[in-house]
Length: 140
Image (cartoon, rainbow, N blue to C red; front, side):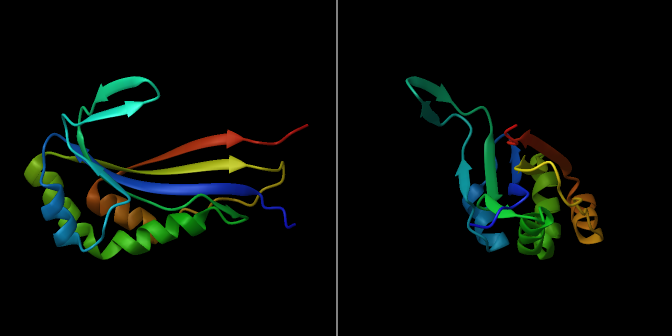
């Protein structure tokens, strides 16, 4: 079985108070991985909670890879041509967005993470924060 340096997943989230999720989905032409409306109830374990925001989310599967930029590129390639639509909704409904990369390191030796110009350009166009959530799975 081949060993990989990381298990990586990436997601983009557009969120804020109420905005028309169905209209946004239709205009962008991409079905979200997850979407929910402010005020909706949901259950985690035995607890009933209420959503405090409306959100549209697109995410990759968690993949085993030596190149954690692969799932980053997958998300950016999916959304790049829709940057103006995202920006329009952000401005019209006072929304925020972010791109999150979750990396589980599986070995001490890893390759570098490349943040390419396309990612930088997309994040700048839509005004997205870029976040990393990093875990170390190395067993000594």
